[in-house]
Length: 378
Image 1 (cartoon, rainbow, N blue to C red):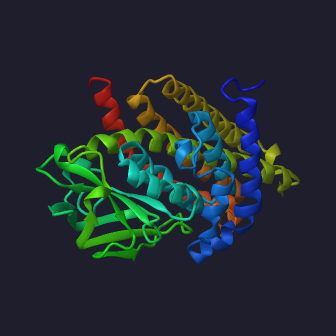
Image 2: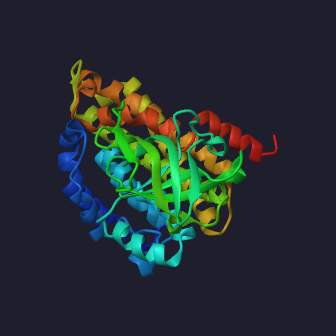
Image 3: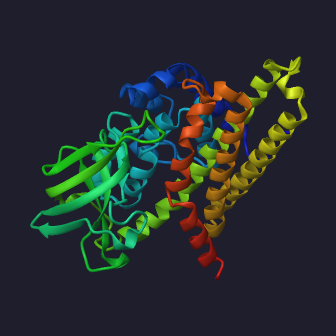
């Protein structure tokens, strides 16, 4: 039965992205993971099929689409089982939307075409060593001095932090609390900016960094919106970021299911295929059930967002549902593979390593529950 949420246009683009992933990512996923990075030219290749411009205005080289087109792209990227590559390619999807929404016209005209064409890389810098996800209490300061801001402080766990050319950065321009937070785009060659690479449990192919600002000077024209409006812009960004993460996690869980099913049909134990053992069949059904539930929740919320709703509580719960589904399916897939699942170089092993970053990034499970409960009036 056809899925009512996807049109022929969605399915046509699905094939485009699938071919891109099969040709440009999947054959190199293990190599890039071991190398700790991938060629920068991949951004331009992704831009050539419209991947980097999805959801952005056409005047800057983007394509305005619904949430289902974005889900198609994210879930096809996940088929490679290369979370680090997908995370880096998608860093513009969290770094650049605030520019498109709140940047000055001349700034957008200069910056966005470079990002959407893959020639430049965008990143988002919110998290700090002392504050984690506590955005309202961030410490990185920006003091106005003539036609520049002087920025001091640190950001950490920044995806694409080493490579980024445009870093959308949360800074404190005013007093304490959320009303003192602003957003500045700090360019990669800004004086006073230095970067330290970080090594991680998973997402090996994605560069992650701590950023250091030491009297870093930034033009006032790089301010997004007005001073003090940064917190609201950041909060708006979180809805799409969490939907994206949920889509990717659900797709990664499906990859684990498909890989485990194929392996269970081919692998023979005690004289018969692994899939003919009842305990294995039950594991696969449990995985399939959770993937189906997560996908259904994802698509219903995507539809509601496209109708103009803002179901914040449900999106928080979806993010937890999807990350928990990914964790369950990755664990069960490795268990079904047995010793083979513990060896580097296969999809289920890479996905298993990527589980925790999804449960933490974009707001941890605990924060998601707290936000959802508040939205529910509890």
